[in-house]
Every structure is written in structure tokens, then in C-alpha cells.
Image 1 (cartoon, rainbow, N blue to C red):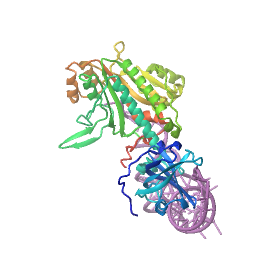
Image 2: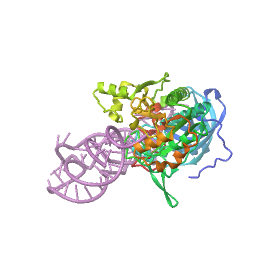
Image 3: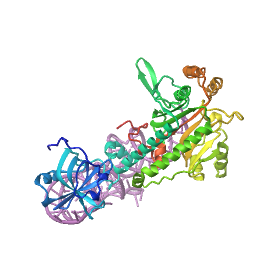
Image 4: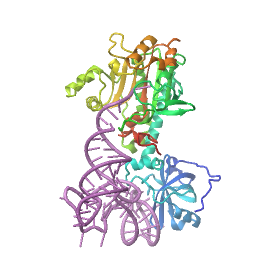
Length: 439
RNA sequence: GCCCUGGUAGUAUAGUCCGGUCUAGUAUAAGCGGCUGUCGCCCGCUGGACCCGGGUUCAAAUCCCGGCCAGGGCGCCA
């Protein structure tokens, strides 16, 4: 088929911007054919763009042969341009239709698509991920990533307003042992290097200069995790603040979450409706329960966890039923948290680390950090880590490290909460896990 | 890495327990034809599938073993 060039055509309106009141007005529309309903003497073409759909109506006897032959060729997913006239009518859901004067076909599509973009025949997640570029054309997925956009936009705006500076720390790092999670190794010229699992050490160093920093970016964990809430590559929203403690950053966090919920509610009601998801604007402050209280609650429900251990997933599910909303878990056993979390001055067995939970899902992890080099070295040793591997990081503590605190939001999990999706992969454009490296 | 469940046309599924009219059903998508108000349009026709390898058996989509893959759960996980 001979394809058309865009030439001097430029879009005048997105589908959503066309209104019945524009009756008689000429518009230029770009997008994709979502569906063609051919009734013989009349043909209905549903044009989709990133904002939605509208109906292009082709009455056989009333249009030029050139427009007719173009519309004859149209099939699902063809990329097209339509120059036409808006006509007010009661016969379409949106109260108007567009009568084409000229149609351009920019690109064709294979007749048998791997998934049904109009959503009539559902496909499994695996099938959808294998055809992800096409899957992402579905209205529902566009809605998910618009919600993510609004969430990130809101977080940035709010943090900027609070005086935070956005930074970019290295993804390629030398140290293999920050403790805990396994890292991916990469060839780095003649050396071995690793992909960063978090910006933790860098953002702590930056509070000495920039005081309040944040970073949004991908991080990597080479874990065996095979669950619907873990991914080898994920987006973290990290902040770190000088001259602050856990309570300060918890307040910042709950305000951030509240702003996000409010913004998504106000700006993305259409997308939430598409996803059949509801987001309430939470009241502040969020409930704060201590680790001890969580264990006590669990014991009452028959799940006994020895003091000092991390709370396993099944127990978190129980906890999520007891507290079916946002809640902080505070005062964790010091040795259950990372080496840089500050132990409490009045009881060093417990630390100033916290998790923000949404039901059973850990959305955010944070805490007051250790500002004393001596204590940090002690904690590294207790964790079985070699302080020598942290030479450069520890040096920063010789130059006036202020008291500081911070947190990290798992962006995908936040989006799961907002969209009601139950698998992290669904809210990740191109998910990466142990078994999936493509597309 | 472990446990459970599963893998059938482009997609989603029925059939599998209890092997044999399964020549593998249905929906949707696709191709062709028809239809002037559809909006999950409708009607007719056509083509299209048992994950891979081995075994049991007269006979395997169906039973057994191995592999690969998927979903869920667990563990791991700043």
C-alpha cells in the first residue's frame, strides 16, 4: 500500500478536545484506528489518540471516492490522519461525529494482532508483556502511566516547594557489599563494577552540601525474589534531609502521600474510572504503631513472631487486615534494619527506622541515619561488613556530617496502591525479573 | 531456590479426573461476501491449535518421567 506523508498537516485537536459545540468546524486529527464498524452503506471508524477516542463517520454515498477508498483500506492500529468537519449529532455517545474530507494513512499494521487492543478479548499478563508495545496502547495502560505521571509530577512539585534539590547519583558503583541484597555485576573496562541497589550512601553524603536532596531513578537488585511485588529493576523515589530526624521525614512523607492522592483524585478521575480504582485523600497524621505493638497485634491473631525478627509476608497480610489503610511501623529492632539506621539513644536495641505500610504492602522505608562515624563503623562490624569497603563513604563523616534522615518510596508499589493493580509488572512499562529480560 | 496449579488456533477458554465418534467444541480476532446509524453492530461462509523430549498402551490433548515456561504462594530482599 502506498503510504502518505504528513506533509503540512498538523494536529488541531486531540480527540478529547473536540466538542459538539464545534459543529461545522474543520479539524485535523491524528491517531490510530481502534475499530472499524462497517454497516455497508455507512462505516464507523473509531480513532484513538493518547487522550481518548472519537468517531469518524463515513457515509458511502455522500463522500468523495478518494476518501471512500482510503477508508476502505483502514484496519485496526493503522496510524492515520483525518481532516474533516465536526457534526453535532445525538447518535454518538459524545454528541458529535467527524465527517472526513481527507484521510491520510501513515502506517499499516499486521491484520492479526497478538492482543485485542479494544479490550473485548482479555489476554494473560504474560501474553501482554510479550507484546508490551502494543499492550501499552490499551486505554487501561495509558491510564496507569498517566496516573504515574501525575504522582511523580506532584512529588517533584511538593519536594521542590519544600526546598529539596533533585540530584543524580551513580548507577555504576565499585562496592559489592552494602549489605543485604545481591547486586548485578558489570564489566567496567578492566574492572568489575556493580549496578547500584539504592542511592543511600550518596544521598547521605550530599546532605553535607545540599542539605535536602531527592532522586527519582531506577535501581537494581539481583534477588531470587519471585513475587508480584518485587522486580530486578525498579524506580525509587529517595529523599535525604539534613538537621532532621525520623519524625520530621515521616511528616514530610505523609504530606507527600496526601498530596499525591489528592492530585490523582482531582486530575485523574477519568483514568481512575477506566481502572475502576478509587483513591481517597487520607487524613493526617497516619497511624503509627511500634514494632512491639505489631507483634502484640499479631500474637492476638495467633501469629507469634520472636522479637527481633523481620515480619514475614504472611504476618504482614494479617497486619494489613488489622490496619486496612496507611500506617507506620516504627521502633524496629536495630539489628533487623540496615547498618546506617540510628539506634535510639534511650534504648539502642531499637532503632529510629520506619516503614510506611499500605495494608500489607511496604510502600516506603526510612529512618534517622547515624551521623557519628564511630557508631557507623561499629554498626558495620556488627553487620559483618568490612569498614574498609566503605572508606570513601566513611571519610565523608570526617567533614561535618549533620544529623539527618530520609526515606525511599517504591514507585511501582505506590502506583499499585493508586491503580488497584495486584502485580508490580502491570504498572511497570517494561518489567525485569529473574525470568524476563525482554522486551 | 522451594511448594501448589497450569501450558489446547492470533487471543481467551471447553475437553484431561475416568485414554477410544476429539475428524478437538465455543467466543473473539483474521480472510471473503452481505447490510445506511453502529457504538461488545449484525448475518453467512472459510482457514487456523493439543509447550518440548522420552515412556506406557492396540490406542495419548488425556496416564507416567524429564525439561522449559507461566500464575499464585513461600523464602530471599536496605
